[in-house]
Image (cartoon, rainbow, N blue to C red):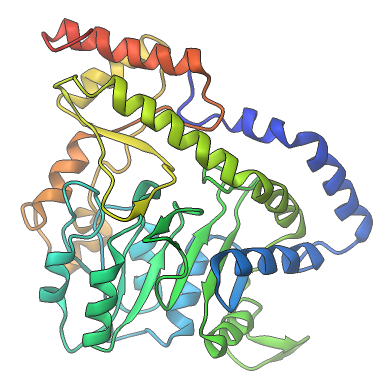
Amino acid sequence: MIPLINLRRQFAFIKKELMQEIEEVIESGQYILGRRVKELEEKIKERLEVSDAIGVGNGTDALLLILEGFGIGPGDEVITTPFTFFATAEAISRAGAKPVFVDIDPVTYNLDMSRVEEAITPRTKAILPVHLFGQPADMEPLQEAARRHSLFLFEDACQAFGATYRGKPVGSLGDAASFSFFPTKNLGTLGDGGLVATSHQGVAERIRLLRQHGSRRKYEHEKIGMNSRLDEIHAAVLLLALKEIDQWNRLRREKVAIYLAELADLPFLTLPRVGEGREPVWHLFSVEVESREMVRKFLQDRGIETGVYYPLSLHLQEAYRSLGYKEGDLPVAERVSKRILALPLSPFLSEAEQEQVISALREYGKKEGGSGK
């Protein structure tokens, strides 16, 4: 089976150095918030050109800590996308605020900027776009809207480490950004991990306090915080992966270029397109297809794994029934969720494997009466 994401090959690439680093961590006796976490924070801070980077337990915690750090809570509204992983909205709800869903752009699958402003109310405190599948959202109009209405602008950059928007790194385009280091992410570790990036130094200090039970000194607690700290072993993995991330992202782009060229004439596929001024990192390569389950089964029978991200828009989830959304309210997100299909992609997808995926899709196209060279 050709996997959707080949983590074994990725971690095998750095395994020798990694085992040495893990041994050093074990010998050090310091396993949480040690020197490797500080080194990782410094390197990412410099890369993103922000004043602070704060390692935390996972990407969801990063989102929640941003919201709490900026004082978002009960009675507040946060505008976000319905087409993303549940954690984006979940963090808003956990902070006590209300997610307000705005439909997506049919080309990039990110927030439809033309619809954001009409969703702003006196209760709106922030806008939270997601750089979905590694493609930056169109941040310039959001920055302008946030300025006009005195709103915070946060980035869910959990899928987009290394992407740029108009030459600037994702993670530096708003008041704060969240990153996830879940294993499948472009920059991932052997478990959970996350990071908050911001240039609001006072908020950064508050988030550092909150991530460790609201405590600066042991057994003295200034605030009700949480336990969300990045482990040293995860930081060791991430420091090694950070050395490779630009090369890995380049390989992803090259493989996507091949997909786009070789699949362009298949009428049953709608291929992703890149928005102006954006340099994506292709966390996932997702296409739209008619009869998705038929295509999935056809590929599975030929040893090719696929994925669906995401099969049900957030506004239609049972957990958000109380918000009163109904089917048809956000038609683009609803349509895409029924058609979206992720094809195998990773820096370590071999040329032969990619050709097998392309050939299988061409075979399906011929079977269905579509094009196939």
